[in-house]
Image (cartoon, rainbow, N blue to C red; front, side):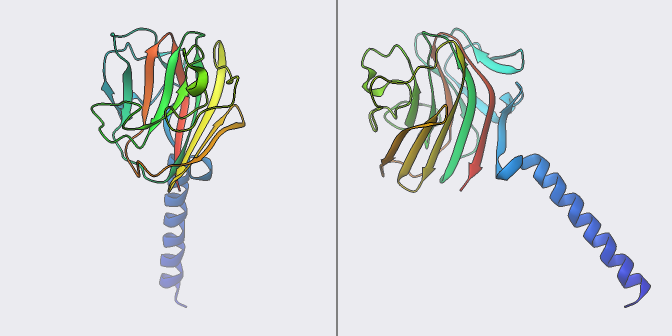
Length: 201
């Protein structure tokens, strides 16, 4: 093999390694793609409804809004994926992670799957850890208020799984929605998201 060919092959290998390293940095570990990281990421979402979303102390938070819930809605649509979030909620917070939303301009628990965060929901059947109107949570529901929590939602085909602080709270099958954007909700109280990442499956 000639010197020029060996040199070209070394250059190509080095270029490929650099590209792969760049990809790994963008993706995060294990194929996870960051949506929110230490307060960065608002530019990845469209705002629907009125809420005072802002970056405070390394998290994206909302503390007040209008008379109806407000959302940060991803500009991308997803089919089969897992999404996980580190979040803090006040005791009176009404929040959640909405997935496979059918209308990115009008987010509801009727046209999305809503993994709920609502410790004070009047009917606790679909309180924190449930998928509202689809999969109830065991009683009494887990509590999110006053501390940092993790929630992971996996949607693969018709299989929906919710993990809340490492505990499986939903394992259910439903065929209503196959794909759509993801939305983070402010409904009332204070909610902070310091890390949100998604992994296509």
